[in-house]
Amino acid sequence: MSHDDTGANGPHAKLIRMANQIGTFFLSKPHDEGVAGTAEHINKFWEPRMRRHFFEVVDAGGEGLLPIVLEASASIRRPAEERKAG
Image (cartoon, rainbow, N blue to C red):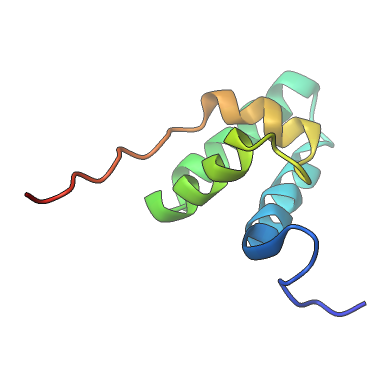
């Protein structure tokens, strides 16, 4: 198995893997602390574009995301929609 980002999760495979790595780290904490830590990390360190792609995955059902990441998504800031010029 290669480490390509062209697997079953398509263009979001790398982002899903990154979110799950964060979630996996926080699994060692008490549940509520782990969920909060996952959300806090993504809020602090992911730029709006990454969070926008993250919510594309969540809004499509969250396939591939760990349960802790899906639970944390409720506390992750959604980036503002870009306004269209015109």
